[in-house]
Image 1 (cartoon, rainbow, N blue to C red):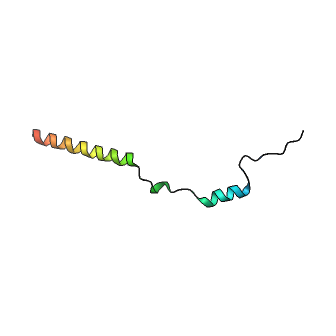
Image 2 (cartoon, rainbow, N blue to C red; image 1 turned 135 degrees about the horizontal axis):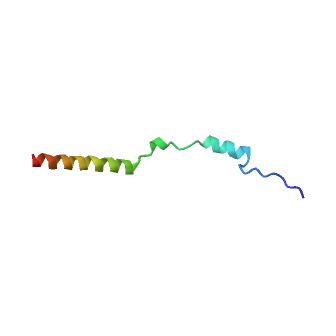
Image 3 (cartoon, one colour; image 1 turned 120 degrees about the vertical axis):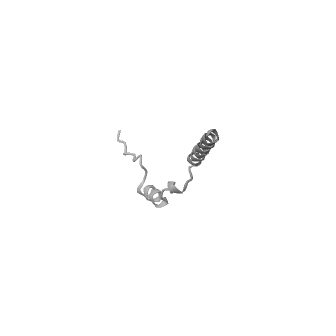
Length: 56
């Protein structure tokens, strides 16, 4: 019983189409979680600074 080899990566044409599509630019996405974390840290530092200023 002979079996023909099956290429799991697909055909050359499929690969060329994939390559021509390109990759989405990850730098264009805004990381909302990072921005929210930075804003929270800045707010916390401001609150601590005001609290320390009131005690002096």
